Image (tube, rainbow, N blue to C red):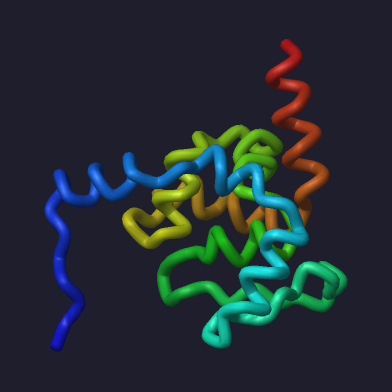
Length: 127
């Protein structure tokens, strides 16, 4: 049995029903509690040093969530720091869309040189 396919209207309604402010406001303790209560949850790797994490990218694509996790940033912090639209970032992470080739290249640069990109974005925003 395959995955059910959602229509655009169903997908839009589902996203509109999510309380993103509540999710963004979650504390580390809230997240740890939810992980502990869910036996199917992936382990919390937030205390693992970033240089110990290796991002696995899908063939022909990029793991935005993996890069963000390696940098230990929330979706909002990642979007703000690197100049991405938060909703677009969520779409990438949820697999609704893949970034275009130019954006994938930028994401690979962010993975390797996050401070460089953050500084360029900050300088551009200050101008």
